[in-house]
Structure formats: structure tokens, C-alpha cells
Length: 224
View 1 (tube, rainbow, N blue to C red):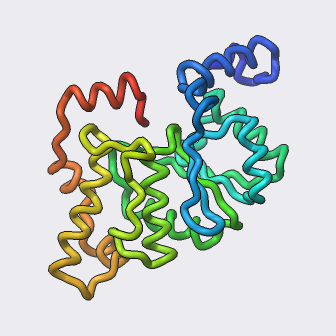
View 2 (view 1 turned 90 degrees about the vertical axis):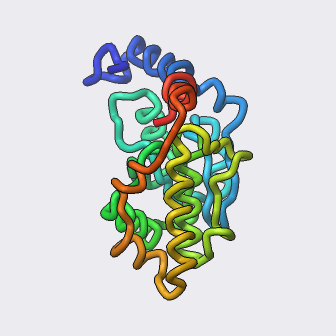
């Protein structure tokens, strides 16, 4: 817990601890310099976790919904600050917690589709760094909503900060399984594959990551 008093987070010392956590333990100082903000398609954007001054651009773009891929961890400074900004600017904040080093369940894919269908646009999707989970969701948006094939939709790219040679490479492996299956079964849609064929545990079990890569991802970059 990062507040001195979680029941009174606006107390000066609690606010001080909150900002210490946000800026240093959560790598907020990096996001002060680079927010990894990019358009996905018309009315859809991706980024790293926004800081208060980033809301100037968010407001300028008319964003109505923020999809927080880190989930509703109310004990962390980064969550409290973002929630305050969303309330201040009357932006809906949807907490949808997914991992950068493990795959979504079938139920989570269904919720993802529901969010895309029901959210008020324009929307911003963000994780911590804007590299892995934001890339996964951007790809899924293009496939679910825009009906693009994976080659067109793929947003898991190195220039967004996504690298496949550590634990986050399991996201790439997920799509590799889909592409290989589609080649043999072109009549099956992506949604049907997820519902009837996709095996989360089998894909994760087949994924190999070097220990040094996993150590860097978890302990230095602190991928979630």
C-alpha cells in the first residue's frame, strides 16, 4: 500500500507518497518525457499511462472513454490520479485488467468485444508503457471492429516498445496460432476460433522465454 492513510488519500503526506510511487516506482518520470501516444484508427488512440498534463491533449481530441488495461488497483497512486482526472474532465474510465505476459481468457475476449461495442467514442486505451497490452488491444480492435486480417491489424511492433524475446512474446504466439490455424481453415472466423478452438493453457505451455529476458521484463521494465 502506498498511502500513509488509505482512507484519507488527500492528506498531504499521503499525496506525497502517492506521487513518489507514481513517478519513480511506476516509471512515471519516463512518461513525463514520452507518453507513447498514437492513433489506432479514427476515434481510437493508444498510449502509456497518462499523467495529469496529458489530459490537455485527451480533452483536445474529445476523448469520452478511457480503457485502463491495468485494472482498478485503488491502492496505487497512478490509479488514484487518473481516476481524479477522469472525474474532473467527465471522462468515463473502464477498468479492464489484462496481463502482458499471459493470455486473455475466452470470457475476457467477450468482455473486450462488449467494451468496443458499447463504449462512447472517441476512446483511449492504455496500459503502463503503451507497448504490450495497448498493442494487443489495438490489434483486437482492428480485427473485431474493423474486420482487418492480422497482417493489417498487427500493432505489436518494436517501435511502440513491444519486444517478443521476453515474456511479452506470448502475445505474438497467440496470433501465430491463429494465423497458422486460419491457413488450414480459411472459413473459420477469428471470433469462432476464439470461441471453439483457442486453448489458452496449451499456448502458454508451449511458450518458451529465456530466463534473462523474463528477468528484465519483470524486474527492470516491470511489465505487468
